[in-house]
Length: 213
Image (cartoon, rainbow, N blue to C red; front, side):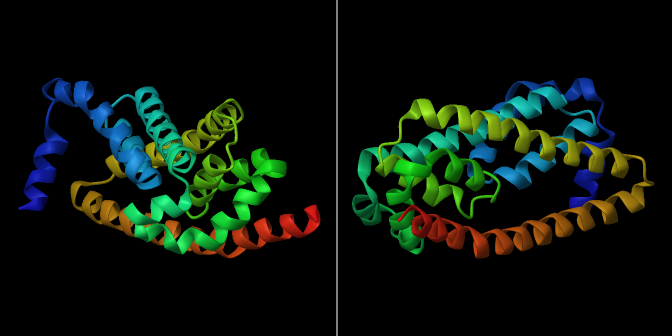
């Protein structure tokens, strides 16, 4: 059944998918705000298949990530961490990082924000919340967020586009295998990347605190 649906979409004329161009980019921005890297990669693959335009995929993904950044920053700025825990108890796991980062934001805000942008959510959430709690000016946050998104989103869109272009050139049977393999490889790669970045980012924050003292 799934293979049949995939085959129908793959063989559908591009002009019959105009609705995707009108609504797909809005949906892409929303999904990127929730789960950025994976959705951005698939957006690039959709562009390679001709269902979306790569420049609009890039723009929608960048907007989605920027909205997510401002959302986490706003939660910290308006609520404070203790108040947030009442409504979002899952944030408890970020408490050690946030306590350190809130203090360090006054002296190392730009450096911490820039480094955290490349950790796929491992450090960016506590860093943005801490930035809000520390009342880091949004005028300082926005340029860092936009600069990082330009690089990070561009890399993901290009990777997804090249991967999608490779898959579309394969025979139909191999396309399914390549697509499944690409999904598995992407998930494993992101999991490993998060494990690596989560191991060094808290240490870097703490070492910054020591050097500041």
